[in-house]
Every structure is written in C-alpha cells, then in structure tokens.
Length: 320
Figure 1 (cartoon, rainbow, N blue to C red):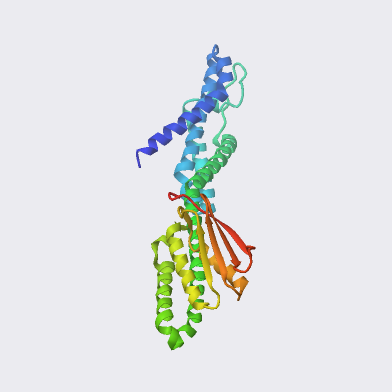
Figure 2 (tube, one colour; figure 1 turned 180 degrees about the vertical axis):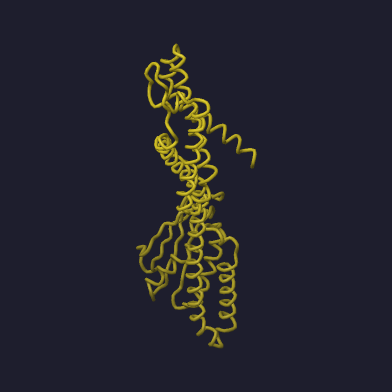
C-alpha cells in the first residue's frame, strides 16, 4: 500500500494549490505589470500557502492519525503545538534568508533610512495565528477521515451484534418452547398405551425440531428457505397434536411455497395464537395463504368461520 502515499500527497497538493491560486488570482492579475507587487504576492500568498499546506499534510497524515484514532487528546495538543512552532521557525528562516523584504519588513522605509526587519519574537504571533487556523482545519479533516474509515466497520459490528441478539432471542424462545413440549410429553411417555406409538413419534419429532433450531446452519442467517421452514412447521404441528390430543389441528395451505422467510416466524406466531385460544372445542383450523411476497397465517376455531387471529409474514426472494 506504500505506492498510494505519493499519489495521495500530490492529489492534496494539487487541490490546495488550486485553491490558493484561485484566492490570489486578483492580486496576481493586478500585480502582473509590477515586479515588486508580483514578488510580494508570490511569496506571501503562493509560497507561504504551500508551506501551510505541508503543515496541514503533516498533521493530517503524519502526527494526528493515531492520537485521533485512540482519542489521546493530550497528544493531539502537544503534536499540534510542536508542529506549529516548527513551521513558525521554518517560515521565519525562509523570510530571513531569502525574502526579508517581502516577509519580515516592518513597513515601507523612508528614503535614506535603513530597513527595519522583525525579529522572530515579533514575527511569531502572526505565524502562530495562521498555524492555529491550519491546525483546526487539519483536525477537522482528520476527524472526517477517521469517521469515513471506521464508519463501515462500526456499521458491520452493529449489524453483527444485532443479528447475534436476534439469534440469541430466537434460540431462547425455541428452547423454552421445546422444554414446554418436553414437559407436556411426560403424560404421554408415562402412559403405557401411548408410550410406544405416540411417545416414540413425539421423541423423534422433538429431536428433529431440536436439531433444526440449534444445529441447522440455515438458522445462522436471519432468513431461511420457506420450504425448509414449512417442513419443520409441519413437524411442530404434529408434535403439538400429540401433546394436545384433545385439540385437533388442521392445516390448509394454498399457493406455491417459495422464497425466503424469517426463521421460526411461522412456528412462534402460531404458538402465540394457539395459547391465546386455549382449549377450543371442535378443533382449530390453521390456514396458510401464500402469495408472491407474503404468507397470510390465520388461526380460527373450526366451529366458526371468523378468523380469530390473522397475521401477514413477508416473504423474500431466494437471493436475499
């Protein structure tokens, strides 16, 4: 990745110098016929603007990345002040050795009088003030880069945490439900007449549901194949028929199964509605009406034509 750094430097330099030239264009245009004015503009605006850019670049990509990343504010302050002081010395040295008349001259001298130049102590407040402005801009830009670089990772971590919480809650609900069925299977297993046939079938169904809820890799994702979910949904209904033999359940499916669905959504929703109905004489009708983008789940007593509970569950395309 080292080859990216020169490219990054020249891109930022080009943008910064373009802004400086745009800012100084009126002075350059007006001072073109006058060499003294032209030199003053080139030194004070263009050259020192380039020096300020290097202060900006040093702070953004050299001194501040780690302190900003780890929120070491005291290092930010120390590094920034040290860089400002260093560039104040550089600016004074450039003016002292190369352009004293354009940088350090106190004012226009009278004819025959010697020129008076500023000392470093006299010149420092001006350059420190400019350096503070550059440092604030550099710190803001560093924060922007830090947010841009870390925001995708933060979003991925937040998404992963949310998905893990959903899976944990789903596993808890499934575990409680299976424990509930295991408790209700106790009378079936204790009765010698029902133990061999119904009890054996119930244990096999419970084992299949447990394997699906806890070990099936499809449930590691939020959505599973609707056909697989429907298969285990029918196992869940078969287990419930054994546990609640006094409450017959009838399943009616209309439409063609397909697409993806939230894992265990059918099972949990149906169980909630069945517990609300309680012991209903005559049995219960469970209807699944599958359309292109949703499945309508309705739960109602057989002796009435009114759907006591109806819920729409969204279906997702296979590639989602």
